[in-house]
Length: 313
Image 1 (cartoon, rainbow, N blue to C red):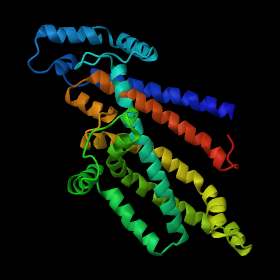
Image 2 (image 1 turned 180 degrees about the horizontal axis):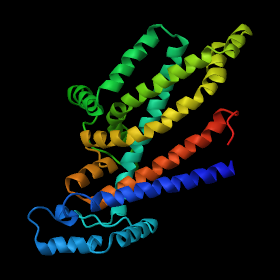
Image 3 (image 1 turned 135 degrees about the vertical axis):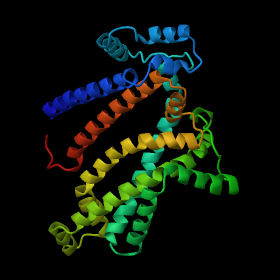
């Protein structure tokens, strides 16, 4: 196990090095002068020269990369071009809404998706299975922002049951925090619930057709024991894999959802940074999300041994 973790960490470092090179070159190899793009059309030569000096664009490319990489290792993600504040400080201010939305979305998606998939597999060809097919088609085909606007119109504008937009920090009260996250969580969860439910159904159907499941049924095992003690544990590896992969889709979904519901999170910060051509923020978010995705994949691989004792590294 220790050797496997070491090899995965080495490969993760290699992946992050490639991501770092890509992110670094993203601004340097863009058409035109990056400093002029940041400064805007009406900027003077003095303003452009100041931005070039601030970003170190006057130095040779290898020197720029070493300085930038060293700053990242020190936790210095640079300074926002638009606001003039440290990027790390801006990210810390926006983390709570994004983390809250992500955790609630994953929890809802896994709870509903796994339950729905198990029921559909247990009653394959029945009403629940047909409903899952309709729900999956809807979840895969309808964009998140369309679902979000529909929920806003139905539950916030027409029904006036939930807030339309905004975010309330949890320290100001759990009720306000939770009520502001219900609509964005449900909207963002739709494609993930459909994804998890379909994979769960397929994995459970494969396991339920095995000989040992028929043996358990012949011995008088209860439906609960067959589904959760025998079938779900053996079908858990594909389900866990798709949950880990869902994080990549979650990143893009958070950006759209926070924009639709005006949530001041990291996704909204990225949208504002793109509109303002604030490249230090974009670079920092890309590096951090890539590193988090690599760590989640490593955690998922290690969790396989907890689900299936036959897996050994």
